[in-house]
Length: 123
Image (tube, rainbow, N blue to C red; front, top):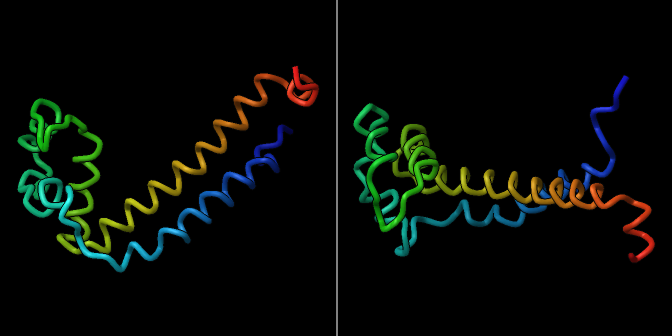
């Protein structure tokens, strides 16, 4: 039977948890006057998840960028949390933590491509 859990991935989980804990204070903050206005507070497009919204996220630029996944994330946050900044920050914290863990997994995979015997010899 092939082993699914590898001990080195415990490091990825630890990094993700540490990242989540370090960003917990952000949950107490409100929206900031940087990009939260055009992205969330003033953005009426994210307030409905309908065909017009899907057309908008894929074919229009808003706030000088084209990033449909960001708009989907904000629309889902708005559907669940409304304009409560806690929920929006919680989603960002979770996504950032997952990404931090995935970076560790990527580094482990890249080191394994090189091979443990070659990495330790310094060649």
